[in-house]
Image (cartoon, rainbow, N blue to C red; front, side, top):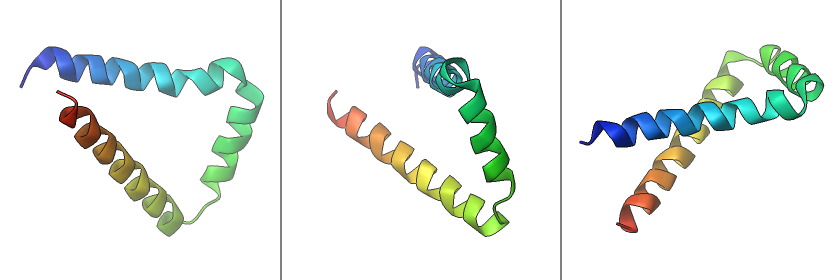
Length: 65
């Protein structure tokens, strides 16, 4: 595995994570507060869906190479 790919991916993660707080901090804060009131089950399901989407994107990207 090339470490540069992993470092690039983590870099993109930080960029994408920072877009919403940069563009609309008020809405981002509201969304975070709403998420904090969700049950553990809902948060786990959202985490699972997020991981599956990420895995699918990685698999799709690997097919292009």
